[in-house]
Length: 338
Figure 1 (cartoon, rainbow, N blue to C red):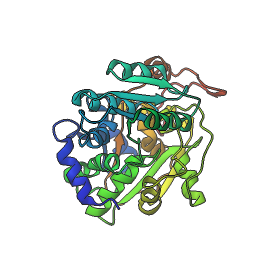
Figure 2: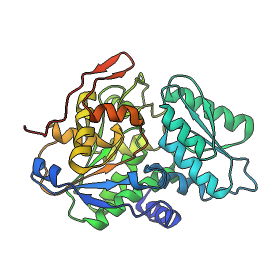
Figure 3: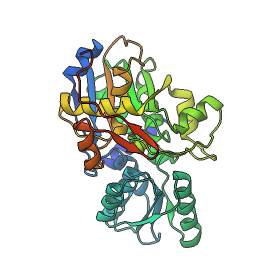
């Protein structure tokens, strides 16, 4: 089983490459919540997303001389992390992605020198292609969430938050495959067993939420979402992240596309931060009243900035957004409570 010692080891492996992002206060969110509210700015990573931590830690032990390369499936940010870390080590990287991944994220990975394979219409299809590459070409697979080195790397975020603010009462963590939430929860609860860690996801296609509810990993239908980084399954043969999230998360909260839309506007207009829909689910949960009033300070993780700027501009301007067969009706930004 993964332990705090693994996360401390990961901190040394990623030092000066993927660590040390700012933890900053949000005065507006504090005014809404009535408690200090902090933003962990993982969007300030060199690749614009927290995934660099796990990727650097996972690739560190790989010998570029004896191994033909690495592969992974990704909704975007994990692929960027693997591509960046592999390029630093001179290792070939092949990133497998589904047709649902926005073009901006595909182009960003190609710009880092990795090969991209588009496979099917879901994260599960991309995962199957990644596994075929392992079998056919001997590449090393780096799971976006179910690899102990990846989870340990993501867990370093929890260390940094609690080192900066030991008094944090509640952590709101974006929840997808569970690598981030599981790693952060393990780190945080190892340091402070009484801290609350709440996973937040979108209410359409939240695989980890469905799996925890069923008591086992299950498949869900993947649909377009503003929080596209949270899409995809957790793998029916999940070895690690499912049990970590099941055992360590105090709750899982789901937010709607409309609530994500408004939270993206809020983060932009109140804190001047450009961020993906997946980043703001914690803010959306607070603004929609889905989080019980905490006893002390709260922190959430702004996980990345790699988004479609054309769509983001429409959201900031209050225009309607089309997500597959689903429409979010546009609304000009209004401050919470006004």
